[in-house]
Length: 184
Image 1 (cartoon, one colour):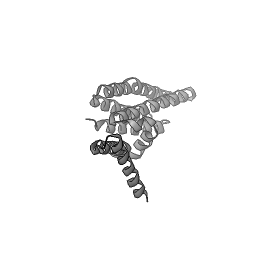
Image 2: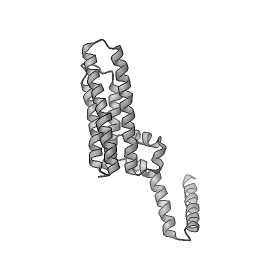
Image 3: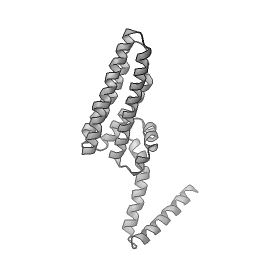
Image 4: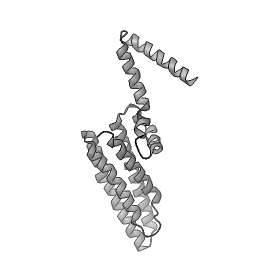
């Protein structure tokens, strides 16, 4: 039944486009393909990442993705990196206020520096590179964010209080890098 509905919907769209474009079937087909391509772009893009479901979740939840090309999808994911970095910094500040252990404070301060680097260097580099059409530097920025999160996690002796944040940052960053790589 769904297939029939899609077929009827596509037929109506083609008929409407032919009327709109003075019967030009090429322009009508082009619009149909473009519409279908936009609908599948998130799915096809995310299939080429290490965390397909995470990718689809973030991109589908952002209304800007409906009109985005792959570079636009990458920019959306860079903004997710930015949000995750700010959230991690907020948690680090909370933990620093409650921590009395010297080694814990040292590791938390190191993580704060790493997350500031993600915000001030990696995110900035990725955004600028995507806007200039230089995806290699954007990929480097995303991959560097993943490395910073892993380094933060490894900086604790014993259990890290930032495991969830670090894992989330790592996964979003490598997913972003994989999206950007599709532009190379």
